[in-house]
Length: 129
Image 1 (cartoon, rainbow, N blue to C red):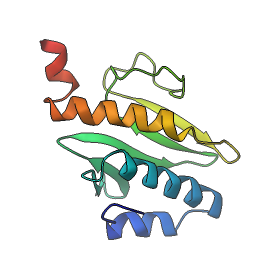
Image 2 (image 1 turned 90 degrees about the vertical axis):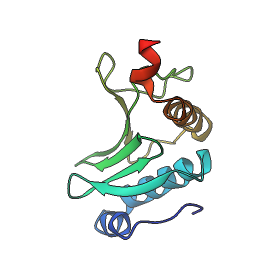
Image 3 (image 1 turned 60 degrees about the vertical axis):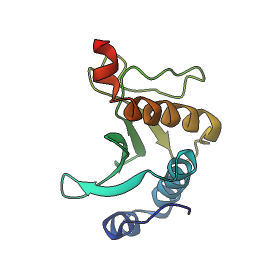
């Protein structure tokens, strides 16, 4: 782990079944490897969010998968890892099930593009240009 852990995120992860905690910890490492300036926090009372000049992504463990919510509906997806929320006005998601392998390079590419857009004012501002 390379980033700054938030105690609320640690508490969220500690309550998860082993397989979901493992997925979330891998995603957390990928997020921080994308940009070490990304900060994690808790929003909506319990949900882990990762922010850098705006929301980058969020984690949510559900009954049978983990969602990585991506807060930029315009981000490109050349590897096809985004599998939910196409056509959503504010974001999309990657659903990861228990035995799925995470495409680290593709995830870092998507997250890196969101960070780059956030550093330029965010996707909403860029779309107005």
